[in-house]
Amino acid sequence: MTKKQKKTAVNTDIVLIGAGIMSATLGVLLKQLMPGAKIQILERLDEVAAESSAAWNNAGTGHSALCELNYTPQNPDGSISIDKALHIAESFEVSKQFWASLVEMGLISMPDKFIHSIPHMSLVVGENNVSFLKKRYDAMQKNHLFQGMAYSENFDQIKDWVPLIMDGRNKKEKIAATRIDIGTDVNFGALTRAMLHYLSEQNGVEMRLAHEVQDIQQDENGRWEIEVKNLTTRRKKVVTAKFVFIGAGGGSLLLLEKSGIPEAKGYGGFPVSGQWLKCINLEVIEKHHAKVYGKAAIGAPPMSVPHLDTRFIDGKKALLFGPYAGFSTKFLKNGSYMDLATSIKIGNIRPMLAAGLDNIALTRYLINEVRQSPEDRIKTLQYYMPTAKMKDWELEYAGQRVQVIKKDEEHGGKLEFGTEVVTNAEGSLSALLGASPGASTAVSIMLDVLSKCFPKQMQQEDWKAKLQDLIPSYGHSLAEDADLTAKMRARSAAILELNEKEEISI
Image: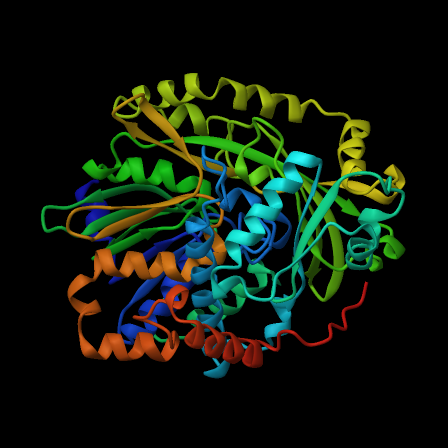
């Protein structure tokens, strides 16, 4: 950066790049822990929560591993591993505690704007799949986090749960389902907007929309210089900060590479796009009240697990099916087709090539998904909803996800499904890469960021006390304490007004 640019630099303590659920969560945590901190939030779009956090750009499941079969893989010996499911379920409970505290403290209001109770179900067809689901159910019954889950292979019982899925189905078909009533639907766009509204009203916090970060460099004193372009005036400025968090969704990888930190070397990204079928028939929407997850097709990425989903968006009940995966070289829904090519560097070309060779079948699957006709999509839906008619559904484009590619000693590189935090040695810059179950576990992920970037402060009694105010179970394992789990769930449900009769217009 030039001397002229440095003279016009704006100094702050913290820069959060991206105005989505991650930056909003970290911003609220930091403002509660460091009330005097100066924070700048930089967003390239002219509105907040418009990419992956937007309601129609994600599943909104409130991922708690209650129904998502990919979180409970089957081991080679036939047993079911629930370790990942336990971690995600516990993390979601932590998120609910945090959101409940924000409501209780009056920092955000009207929880019915962003969270609703909805049963979570898993449903499978075929002898082998039924056997898997029964084993999964039995394994999950061993931990209290999944208490209250019901299992059935009875046609009439399942029809009582989800008549829309069972109408028109052959009664001789081998089918099974699990159901648990403590599930939720979360509008992460509305939640993000509520948290960012709170932040924007705090002293020392500045929100900059339509501001694109074009470069990130560290000066000789360890401060970060962020070159920012105002997309409205076309003017550039430099913001300097002690700490930078990159929470820009699919755009995080490109910004992380610009930072030049050695920890970023070897990381690449594999973009996956998505589409939904959205129901436009109000009578059909009213007949379904559950989130029903099935098994992913062979070769499909985990985020492409099919589900017939009841949603609550902007005060209205909605119904969607999907997602139909696809391939695009964009890293953001509002990104550039050059994003993938731009991300390839000397340091990550080998891992990306290795991961690409290992995932040719996945690439072929994604391309075939893009080529699907409307008739093909309806045929897939009819596997879950036999009476589905094309006239009742329209196509809706979902958000863009970038899966993590990282170094692997054995293969040179591997494709990871999940989220990963990349932080430099001194903890002055951190970036979040990856996708699902990101938003639902945002609070736990941001606590991890705080531990890596503010290790000394996290050991101080005032920080511990504040975190326990925000997250009453902080420092304790919910997966190991049934009484604490029950207490925390009851608290969250009461404050967030969950498990009450929904009165949502359609």
